[in-house]
Length: 244
Image 1 (cartoon, one colour):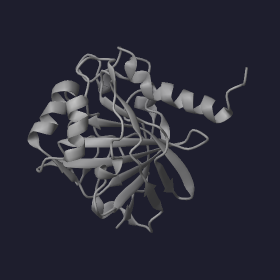
Image 2: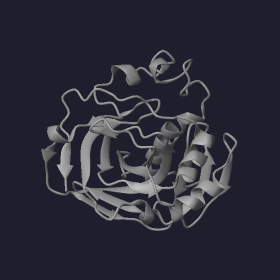
Image 3: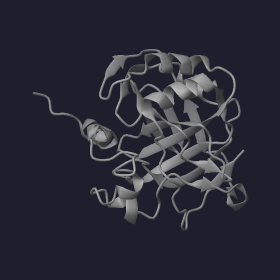
């Protein structure tokens, strides 16, 4: 029998970490929400010094040159209700390059309201596009949504989102390119997963310009996921780079 490659082993480990959400011990209620995650065994959620999400104060950012290139394709495979979010999975054909590292898109999921903020402003919806390189390093692209016009591509996700926990449905050919604003200005910083185990050393890219989704679309996702945003974390000594 052919032994699995090191890259595959690393990938499986990362996916298992991301899908810790399938365990039932943590959530967003008063009893098992973010303030309780460390007590539930996820110590990094409390002890980490580079935790996400954060409030980005634009006047405190450092101007930088663009290091980001995105090549997305319509390569979604299926959609899952993890019990904590609606997750869209991909066939690893969509790519992101950042600071000379190359990452494959493996998953996207949603938070209502947004987790990251800009100048103290929260958005009604945020999409996280999770990427991984060949050695297991993670990069997350955050995309905000304001309430406004109907979003055609989001419609396919909303109408196919499973209503039951751990339920999965096929969902192919979602054009993920439609979830990127026309202007690609962004903030970049070192952070973490925003859910247990709150793993750090995650490269974050938060796009500046929000997209729009209808009130009904945002409400429909919230009805399934409920409020699933972690509270804002201290920035500590991190530098936030701003790219126009």
